[in-house]
Image 1 (cartoon, helix red, strand yellow):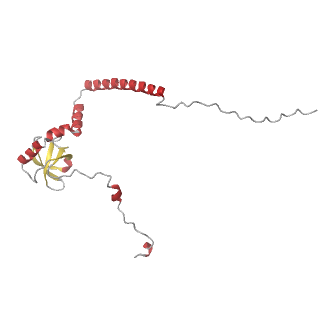
Image 2 (cartoon, rainbow, N blue to C red):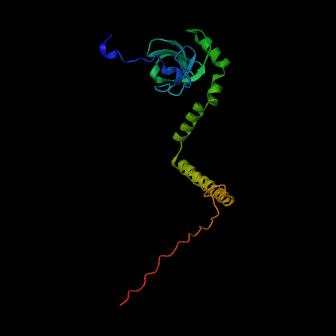
Image 3 (tube, one colour):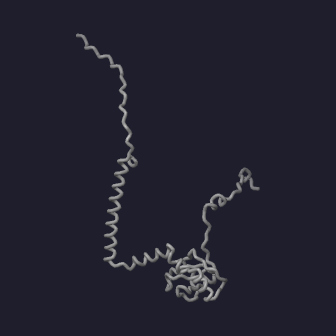
Amino acid sequence: MLPYTKNITILNFSLCQTRCEDVMPFERYVEPGRVALVADGPLKGKLVSVVDVIDQTRALVDGPGSGVSRQQIRLNQLHLTKFRLKYPFTAPTRVVRKAWSDAKLNEKWAESQWAKNLANKEKRAQMTDYDRFKLSSARVKRNRARTAVFKSLKVKAARSGAFGKKKVPKTPAKKIRTKKAPSAKPAKK
């Protein structure tokens, strides 16, 4: 034991015992059956399912429901989704196709918020200048109507006393009577 460590006490506790219980564990792993969205390359925007992990940077994927043939793809081109298909390791395409259709993956994907956001993004990209003008005009109308309703509700709430400064009845302050200082007498000549 070193001389300068005599007085040091070591506490054995784990920070993870207190903090990790509240945090959700990581759930999306690159595993056979995991459905992913291709984020880059010629297949961008298509759904695929991981069939096998080749190495730490590549996976064998198959997308029979989205028209993607079996091929290898880099993992940094994939965005993992919450969906997972059940089929054995290195299953042939017919098994993946059956699992895809049994899980009704295309319908589930279309209902997900992620797919809806991508569809909205695509719609915005296809908008013309006139479409953008119509959208901004509609927003102005909507915001004016919203502001008018908000102001009327605000005035109504202020009158009822539920909103704004509370009106407290004022009580008159009590006057404190003090003795007057003796008046100075004029000096005699």
